[in-house]
Every structure is written in structure tokens, then in C-alpha cells.
Amino acid sequence: MSIVVKNLTHIYNEGMPFSSKALDNISFEIKDRDFVGLIGHTGSGKSTLIQHLNGILKPSSGDIYINDFKITDPDLNLTEIRKRVGVVFQYPEYQLFEETIEKDIAFGPSNLGLEEEEIKNRVKLSMEAVGLDYESFKDKSPFELSGGQKRRVAIAGVIAMNPEVLILDEPTAGLDPGGRDEIFELITNLHENNNMTIILSSHSMDDMAKLAKNIIVMNHGKIEFMGSPREVFNSNVDRLKEIGLDVPQVLELAIKLREKGFNIREDILTIEEAKEEILKAVKGGKQC
Image (cartoon, rainbow, N blue to C red; front, side):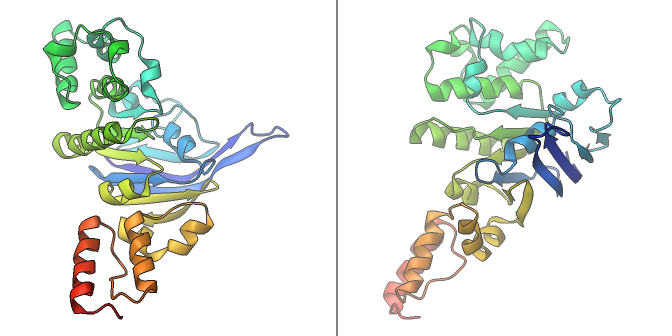
């Protein structure tokens, strides 16, 4: 499912003395089955943008197209869009409320008026997709689970709606390193096995470099950069730091090694590439 954003602007409290422009005439396209990383400092407009992509917020001006649907059309039934575009917000486990995991995940599909058998099937499939065995977990209270497991249940509730686009806003916030790795592995599997278009907002540049196929960098409501991780990170180190963002640690290591005289490639982005280059530099003599 492709997404096209044209000249999108959003002004909070428009026409009021304390109005603020959160999105400033941005345009971009996300192709079907892409995996896009969305990064930017606090206040850059990331969350505002996310809330436009399934109609939670309305733009001050501009248009958004989800396939053939113009979701900025005031006559469009947004239920059809929200079936196709699922959003997982920060700390989604805070929205869990049912007495069992099965009931919580079934809440969304139940509101679509589906048959009971279809709802049960969706719950089972979504639980399997997030790595929770149906028979073992369906009757448990979501409040008995670990933080990472609660996050999985919340994501399963969105997946049960069968979206073609899954948007995740800081999905690993507050998790320990093990839980964070589990959630990122889950997201990767959903992209690869369910043919979903993924839009992932995260502060971790290392994870973005490893996971995303394309990256959008936002700054003060505008798109600063857009391209592959190599295009964004390797070509814009100084500017990314100027706007308050880090670069992947592996890239930072490569820069420091080059400054020390090691003959290291400038476009390193993964640990494997760094290992290979360091071994070559050690064997061949360090000087550039």
C-alpha cells in the first residue's frame, strides 16, 4: 500500500495567539512494502505526522493519499482507512483494559462487525505473529505479563485489524535491552512475513541503520533528509549533529579510526562491515 503526502501543513491552535506550525509544507512518497525509519528530535513533527496518516489529525492544508483513497477528503469514511493503516503509539500497553488477552486483542475486530469465528481466527493469527502461543496466553490477564509481553499484546491488537500499513511510534520506549531486541525482531518479521509497509519512529540511530530501507529525517516540521540509511547517515554526519541527532555508533567509530590514520571505508554502517575493515586495516598497515 503506497502513501503519498503532498504539501502537508499542520498548525496547532491556528488563528490563535499561541499557534505553532508542527508540519511545514512537507511532501514525500512511501512505496508499497517499504520499511521507513522516521527520526527527529523532540518537537520535530514526527508524532504529528504519524497522526495524520490514519486521519487522527486533519491537516491545515495539503493532501494525503493511501493508495486510491484521499484521506483528507471530508466525505471519506475514515473507518476504511483505519482498517488499512494501524498505529501503535508509545506505551501502548497503557491502553490494555480487558480481563483476558484474547478479549483485548479481539476488541478492534469486534467493532468491525465480523463473525465470531473470524474474530477468533484473527486473534489466534495475530498472537502467533507476535510470538504468543494462543492456548498458553489467551485466558491470562494482560496485567500479569512482562513489559515486553504487554507490548506484544498491544501490537497484536493492531495486527488483528489486518492493516496493510503498520506505524509504530517509539515502540521500544521504556523496555530493557532484551525487550527492545524482541520488539525489533518482531517488527522485522511482520515486515518480511506479512508483506506490511512499516513506518517506525525511533531515537535509536543504530537500530534505524540496521532495520530501515529508507529514512526520513524531520527538523522543525520540515523534511531535512530522505533516502537510504547510507545516503542519510554517511553523507550528513555534521548536519545531523547540528540538528541534535546522533549517528550510528559504528559510523562514529569509523570516523574516529580514520582520524587516527586507519584506512577505513567512509560508508561503514554495520558491525560486520566495521569488523571486516578493521581486520583489513590491521593486516595491511593502518595508515590511509
